[in-house]
Length: 184
Image (cartoon, rainbow, N blue to C red; front, side, top):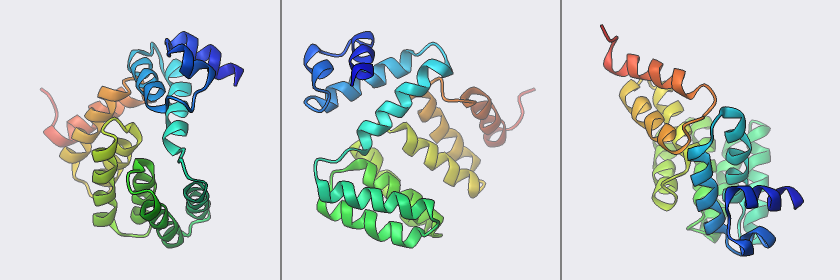
């Protein structure tokens, strides 16, 4: 908790969010995303990315939190269809929970359901258009299909939100080259 308070003070979060981070989750995420965009280096951006992702993963419901944790364990255990089922149940209970859609997209893609994964990513981004992880996943799916233009567009959006993504600039250059051809 002390780390968050010190970080929150450095990030300029409102005093109330500094002492009670759950009270104003959206404001905290907004401030953290602003700090992420302004991060001077990959090393400075990494804890911001992790904290934002952690906040996005939090549900207001113990049942949804349990289903999310189970789904993530199943993904790690390479049981993607079980993960799809549990994450789908989380979405049923909390249909506006953007990160549940993102995690289900990952599970669907691992299970071989690329159209379902893309549909879930669209739902994620409709609910949280700044979800840099969703853009990373979308780029990875497009790359796997050798859809270089879509991968490039998704990676550009990722870089707009998180300009210090590890290896981001090199990846952007590579995808640009694949999508648009070599510059002469």
